[in-house]
View 1 (cartoon, rainbow, N blue to C red):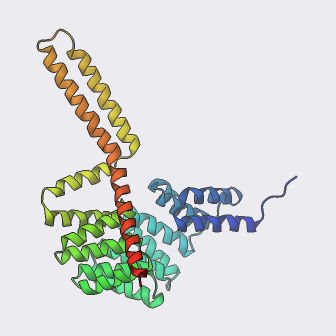
View 2 (cartoon, helix red, strand yellow):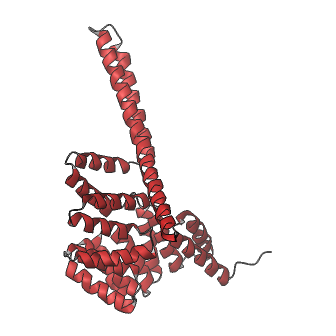
Amino acid sequence: MSQPPSRHSVDELIELGRQMVAQGSWQVALRYLRLALQQEPDNSYAHALMALAYQIGNNPRQALNEAMLAVRYEPDWYYPHYVLGIVLKDQGRLERAEVALRRALALEPQNASVIAHLADLACRRAHWQEAVRLAHQALSLEPTNRGAQLALALARGSQGQLDEAERIARHCLSEDPEDPDALWILAMVAVRRGDWRTGWQLSLDALAIDPEHPGARETLIHAAGMRSKIMVPALRWQFWVDRLSPVWRFVALFLILAGLHSGRIVFSKDFASTTFWTDALMFGWVCLVLFWLYLLLVPPLFYGWLRRARDKRLREAMRHTHQP
């Protein structure tokens, strides 16, 4: 008869899950963490990591459930409250997020990551002075804290101190060229200086890395407005389309085609001007098919093109850098 898994094996599974969460491999992380929870169902650390994995996988309801379970199992540890605050903040529930993060800070007063998330929360509320204070506090505890650096850059840029914001964002970008937040802040600085071309390009670079980045989308729209007012509604429409999942696009396409086919059958009877109505419906049917093909194909092709264009520019920059 096989022996039950040891405590050490649970710790190993949780550590593997944590590494996968850090790498963004949320599906693999969930597999490891579920195995750990089969052996130890009340492990708050595993539930907290599952919350982060679900949040990465765009499953906000399950992420919130797992974070609340983690808090329930270990309410006197800062980490479950910290994860709950992150989940709520990413879902836009800022007041509840602040309560959770403040609770985490009360349990772990010298934790720079908690303070950095509070600084980011202040930025989202446009409380720039509070964001600067919290960012400096986090950086005094951990000078390399990336979240605090980005929050400070965003706050300084929003206060009009564009040179300092650019300096901090470029420092973050030098450490991680794939950081969409740093690219977005640089784009925002460029737009505020009236350089819409640079703002446009940097916003596209940020969207090539994170197509859902809300700040980069808004900055791209502002840059487009500086170039041509006509582009603003077109971009807003494109970003709305991007929110539709492929499943809903196929469902909508099926319903529209079914309705048009039924209408064509009705109008093909012995009505007056039968040929006119049939031709009109067929023309509308073709237009809607082309329109929904656009909705299905353009967003992934567009962001794939952005990614390839940015990779090409980075390769060219690296080649020029290494030339003697």
